[in-house]
Length: 506
Image 1 (cartoon, one colour):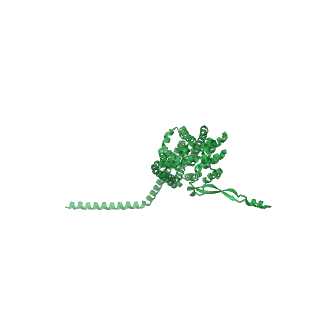
Image 2 (image 1 turned 30 degrees about the vertical axis):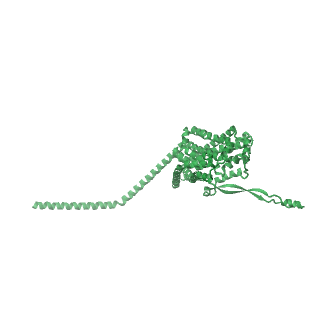
């Protein structure tokens, strides 16, 4: 903020200030792919089908419950505070049209990305429907009886139609990768000892990635500070934007604080009976990283480290719950979109009835699920909500000016929600995991006893066979030894008798 007060800063200086933050983002994104692959496979391979099913069910119930609570909280706050009014839109002006974006296309793109046709391509590209306006000449029979009619037919304007096509856009298809490697990990776990080599490989890969994460964490405080400073400096007319959309920002931030600091800790305490604020201190570094990077997936390496090392959460829980939660558990996004939709209605002087308000809540909940896998997720998911209640979609662009700041707050709430969810699922599944560990240890003991017994039997048989083979040579050796000993003894006795006879003669 002090740099903004200074004279206009050269763009190169702004770039230099933000450069360390850009390097941090690149390092964190570099770790996403190996971390998701290794964590999902090792987490699910260590569980049986029954345990993984219960684990997934508990996680999904938590995700949907907290997302619905966040959306309803956003609706209540925006109705009570009422940040939008028609005069505000006069100051902001008209938004840009979004005719090319279709909610149905976005939904189908979500399903297509869930089933990638090429797994390698899914690591760096995802599918998206693209629309293109094409002019088509009007084909009509020329039936002109006069020159004027002929000219009228020839001067007809061409018809504009919209053609749709599927294109691959840059960006990791996280949803498709998670879907495949969940199935891969479950199948590997069912194979037992046959897959032991592969499980050991991915366990080692996960440990290597986490060691790299520890090295990155030493750099993260400096990188996060530069990232935020560069973003604040690059925003033009920050004071004007804050004055025009200040109440809208306050409404969203208050909702995120209530949800992240009151509702989520209360749910955690009600289920686990443990101090939620001690838990939050354990994930504080992940929360700060999410606030700086505005990326749930980019924060994953830090979240793994905080939960496993600081809080002692079982790796089988974190490796399954966190990657899935970073993709579909978007509490902050659901709250933000519910507030934004009703805020746009208030700016346009539209009074929503109770049915439309319920529709906004439900649509915000569903739209936030899987939003990370859709290109331009904020635009597309917001479009789904506005279309559902018949609000003008062009006003979405009016909120872009403050989205950079609100995105950081809602991402931090998303990460906190994922972390509390992992703690709750671990608490509910701890007895089953301990039982599974005991069963596996018992199986290992039985297997070891079987191997030892087999080894003992083999040695016994080998000894008996060797004894039979060496029986005759043993008899021969004993006979030879007895013969030599007897001969030697008789010689000594004869020598003694001669010496005695000589002594008597003398």
